[in-house]
Amino acid sequence: MHFRYSSSRMAAPPKHDRTVKPKEDDDVEDPVETMINKTGCLQLHYAVQECMGEKQDWRLCQKEVTEFRKCMEQGMKKKLKG
Image 1 (cartoon, rainbow, N blue to C red):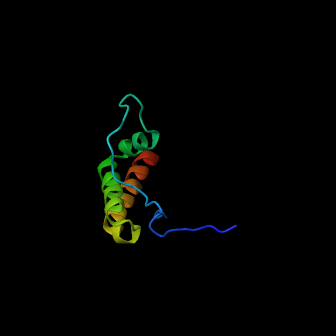
Image 2 (image 1 turned 90 degrees about the horizontal axis):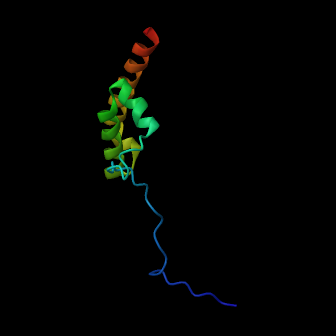
Image 3 (image 1 turned 45 degrees about the vertical axis):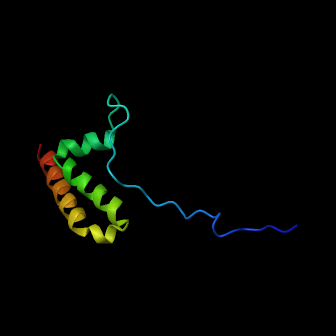
């Protein structure tokens, strides 16, 4: 039995789509977004997602990742202090 594969018929591997998309159902809240929003870092989270969607490589998004990480650390410190 012989199989013939055409390179034009083979699909490229899917890329991760990390772009921010509008919610399909506004009544359902994402628990991760809710938690991040409580820290005040939601816009920085979106900036990381947008960068990842555009560049497809987290190493090229270090500025956004660092800003988000620092914001989350500050938010956690505030939460621990009470």
